[in-house]
Length: 188
Image (cartoon, rainbow, N blue to C red):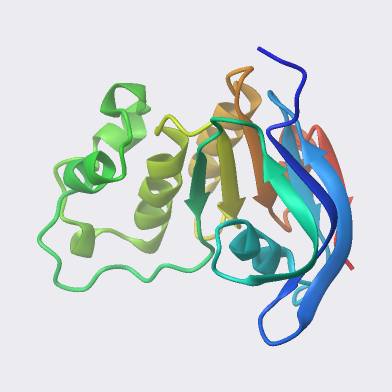
């Protein structure tokens, strides 16, 4: 393992037709969870979208360490309607290692996605990112719709993060953030 950051942002400004967020400068290092905090509409999700090419970078720059792959869980993803795909098929398509799943998720593997509750769907979506081999994980409001047990599973996974992986996380839940964050970055 190297001391090189997985991701380094320098004076980045991002948005769509115009900049909505920035300038921001920070890094995500191996083994740490960095949480973006700020008011709704401050541009936290926009920043994650810019890092995945879904929003525009107007100024500044960002760079990933050589060979770093990114896993991304977007904030909103409606429950699939009338989709005859099982939880196992969804996770396999996402490249997730099914051997890494906690027991609670194993119960969802045989169920069709269109039969899941909102919380079950969210848990599968988050684990589709956590259980893939990407070294840098971008998680946008992963606790949305999760019950306390689901939040605890996610918190445990983030605190046991492999030392060569890092997470950039958007979350408004103070208690959750306090339990997982190595540090926070304020987005104003």
